[in-house]
Each structure stands twice: as structure tokens, then as C-alpha cells.
Image (cartoon, rainbow, N blue to C red):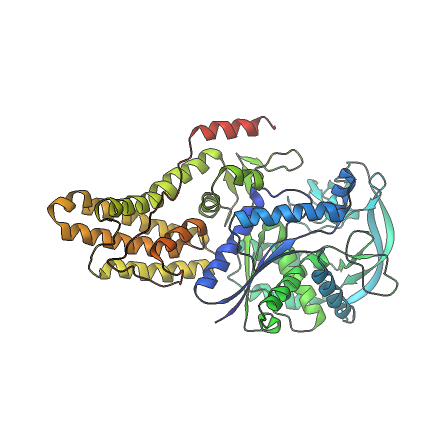
Amino acid sequence: MRNILIAGAWPYANGSLHIGHIAGLLPGDVLARYHRAIGDNVYFVSGSDCHGTPVAIRAKQENRTPQEVSDRYHEEFAECFRKLGFSYDVYTKTSGDEHKEFVRRFHRKLYESPYVYEKEAPQAYCEDCGTFLADRFVLGKCPKCGNDTRGDQCDACGAVLEPETLVEPICAVCGTSISFKNAKHLYIAISKLQAELEALVDGHPEWRKNAIAFTKRYINDGLRDRALTRDLEWGIPVPKKGYERKTIYIWAENVLGYLSASKLAAEERKGDFSELWGENAKHYYVHGKDNIPFHTIILPSLLLGTGEGWHLPDQMVSSEYVTLEGKKISTSQNYAIWVKELLEHYEADSIRYFFIANGPEKKDADFSWREYVHSHNGELLGAYGNFVNRSLAFIQKYCHGTVPQGDDNQDINGQIDGLYRTVGKLIERGCFKDALHEIFEFIRKANKFFDVKQPWITRNTDIAACDNTLYQCVQMIANLAILLSPFLPFSSEKVLGWFQITGKWERQAVLAGYVLPETEILFQRIDKKVIEYETEKLKSIL
């Protein structure tokens, strides 16, 4: 049994979740459910990112405290993830006492290392907002390519930037010109860790291509040291004399949430936290493309900086971006599909299926209502739901709900055994779309099997053949429910319950003579009128 850490990125608690968040984070739950099914010791953790400039600005706009704002969104996030079936072992928040205390202990140790030093440097300040700004809240022209950019990185040319180097810098919140004030802060010498960081990326060819490319670009452009502290009120106080009025920079504490949350999970189950972060564990990091450097550069630098032998990242599950009806999602313009609203009208498994089968795994993906409805009706309901319902309804109607006698079909058993192996390997490699494709290829074969065997005819002409067909269909359905359980937990739970079998990741059989309980349709058809209604609703925003 392996110790597996699955670390999902922490969404900022300054606004509601949209479909882009879900597309990037959903692979983490697939991994967690799969690794539990094969018997691993899984720690699936994440939480809400509550500190920093984004939350402080939202609080000021709403005339509330940052704690009130972040707590409200934290509760909203937790409820959305629950409804979507995210099986977190711990979903916490960076404003929680356990996290704050862990981060302060970690930083005290970090400050003792030769990688931390003091430096006076310019810091972006907005007079209108009355606050210092995080780098990403400074907008301007890239000094290298001239395109519009943020103060930390240019998306157009990939250059790593300092806010003070931007041309015509303005505040991302209010749009006014900003100034720069010199301030003394603690810095971590990431530049001194270049050899270790190069070895990390070179030693993991299994990382997704975007993670490798982004990380190598950062290294080749010249690693820059990063401030560990900031002149902000809302955050974790710096545990160092003379810095009591400063807080730990958000990027230097939110990624440590993976450690604090997994420690909390280990304590709750009386597990060994040191083993989870030792050399024999396996760690997945699940996030969007914009968070790559925080997981491949920043987090490893912090872990290496303490000299305590923390386990470095193994696998980067870094998704690309999601667009909406061909346009960029814009939260400021309300051009987005908000998760809490999506869940009010559509099934969680349907949402999960779409964003795995059509998600931004290797390239940017577009969400369109037409594709979503066609995907649900044509594939999820039309292929899988149809096979389950037609088979079980036939048994209920003509076999008194009892699984009939059948032969041990070696060909079908072999295909199922092969699926467990193939799908499992694909999931572990982060190839979720391919894994789902393999399962649905088998589902199409299963539907063809039902059609070719024609039980609606053989029930009158060859009852033994009819019984055998239905018996084989039951075996396929039972194992499909296990294979699909990481992807479609709600419908899989129903099917596994009908057959009274566990979700263990290996071929299982339902015995002849087993009496089925009353079953139901797995998925409801979505009316095509939804396409026009939802599309027009989006158009009205623009």
C-alpha cells in the first residue's frame, strides 16, 4: 500500500467558482477515487486561498472584513465541491488556525537557512485603493514584447517580470496609475537553487508538456529571487523580530497548504505525516496552466530551502485553459458559467463527464452549450445510460428481476481484465481523456453485443441464449460501474448498490439468481431547447 498525496490547487476566496476552476481541479478527484479503489493510502487535500490582495480588495468593495468575505466564499466552494462529488479528505482554508501555525513554524525554520536574506526593493502601491499590490495586480505593457501583461508574467511572450519594469503600470482594481515605494523585506534566493530545480524538471519527463516547457522557460530566462514578506494587513504575521507589522507573501504560504492540510488529514486518521512526505510516497499536483511556476519552482524552492528533506513533486497534472462559446472567460464582466448555478440545473456526473471527455487536458478547450447537451444526450445517456437501462429493464420485465444463468465468457472477462489494467495505467499517467475513451469504446461494444444477440427475439426462440446474453450484460454493467466510479461517482454508486458489490479495482461477478432491487434511469435527457436558452443568456452579457 502506497502513500499517495493528491494536492488540488486552492481557489482564491474572492469570487465564485466558474467552469474553468472545475476543469482544472476535477482530475484530482479522479486520481483520489482510483487510488483508493486499488487500495492505496490516499490523502486528497485542498482548501480556499483566503489571504492576500484579491480578498482584501473585495472586502473593501463590499464594506466587509476580509475574514467575512473569505469565509463566505470558502463555504460556497466547499458546498460546490461536495455537490460535484469531490472526495477531499480535508478541504480547509488558509485563514484556519492549523494552517497559520504550520506556516509560521515552517518559515521560522526557513529563515535559519542560507537561502533567506533581507533586501530593500520597490513595492507597487495604489493611492486610490490605499494598499500595496501583489505583482499580479499590476497591469501594464510588457517591456520585452509590448503586449498587455500582469506584473508577474507576460502571457504573450512568457517573460518573467518585475512590476516596476512594466511600461505605464496601473492598478488592476481601480485602473489608476500606481507608484513604487521602497521597503525592506525577506527574500528567498531561488537563484541559488537552480541546479536542484533543473534536476527536478529533468528528472520528471512524465510531467505534462506545459509544465516542463513553462518550468524550463523560467529557468532559462534566469531565476529571480522572490520576496517572502509583504506590507499587507490581511495575511499571516511574519514570525521574525522587526517584521511583526508585515505578513507572509501569499505565494509563500498558500502552497504550504498542501503540507498543513495533509498534516491535518494524517492527524485525523492517525496516519504518519512524515511517511507521507518521505521518499516512498507519490505526490500529484493538480492545477491550471497559470499555476505551473508556483508548483514547479516556488513550492520546491520552499521545500528545499529548509533542508529538511521534504518530498518533492512527482507528477504535475497541469491543465490548459477553458474558453466559453469561443471567448475568454471574464469574471469582471460576468461572462462565465458559475458552478453553483450550473449545479442547480444539471447533474453532477453529467458535468464531470463533459469536463473529462472534453476538457483542457493537453490543449485549450471550449465549453459550448451545444456540445455539452450533445455530449450528455449522445454519449453519457445514449451509450452508457442506454446500455444499463435496456439491460436491467429487460431483466426486470422478463426475468422477474432475477439475474439469469449464464456461461463464464472468457473473451468478455479478458476484455474487462484488460480494461482495469489499461484504464488504471492511463489514470496514473494523468491521461484521463484516453482512459474514459477506452471505457466508452467497451460500452459501444457492449451495446453492439446486446443488439447482435437480440434477447427480445431469443426469449421466445432460445431461452438459454437469452439468459446467457443478459447474464453477460449484467457482468459488463457491474464492472463498468467500478471502472467509471472515479469519473462518475454518483451513477456508479447507484449501480454498485443495485448489485451489492464493492468498488474494488478488479473484475467482479454478479451471481446468477441474484434478485435486483427496483432500478431507475441513470441519466435524464436534456431538452435541446436548453442550448438556445443558455446561449442567449450568455449573449445578453456581452
